[in-house]
Image 1: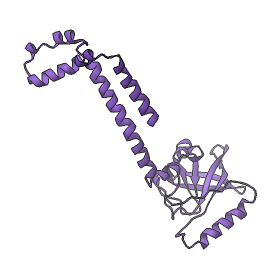
Image 2 (image 1 turned 135 degrees about the vertical axis):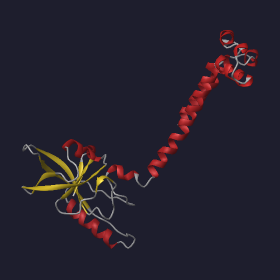
Image 3 (image 1 turned 90 degrees about the vertical axis):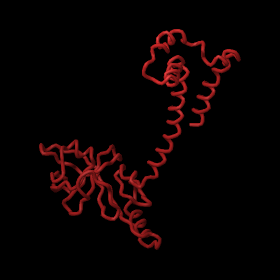
Image 4 (image 1 turned 60 degrees about the horizontal axis):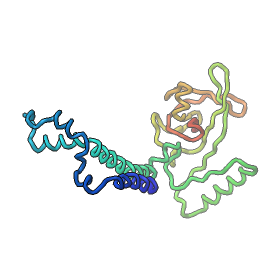
Length: 229
């Protein structure tokens, strides 16, 4: 950002090297003054105040100069306001909801590897024994088989756990609370053509289980196609 400001300033200020002292004192009278003067003569002004008319005519007469100032003003405002908006977005407690994650202070993820079940149980035990932890909720992310109505199958990423401790903002509906309820991400809901109250079929341990859609939420992880049970 600092580099952009420095380069812009050098380009703009560098143009003053080609302007002489006398030309600078003329304040741009070298522009299209005769043409504008003939187009907007003072004798034809009947409605505007004379001072306002002269000001507008001066702006039109030196349109390139004032246009450059207008561009510099908007560009400077943009590079000043954009980082502030970006910072306020990142500091917002609701920002994490766009990633399909409930509002919490700390989130710990374990990568899939050998012995992950033992490491997961050890981590949960340490967190449960920590007196500084007010509440926590473990989640498991798995891939299940989604069975379409025509018999076709495809994989779907499903996160399971108790979503009442760290609530997520739902576009529609609510978090899944029963064993046979499921919440879909916005993209999954659109691709499947499913809405609140509709059902989908998941193949779990070789058996097909009918799940009722309880909510739809926003998510950007895993390509925006996830689910929660």
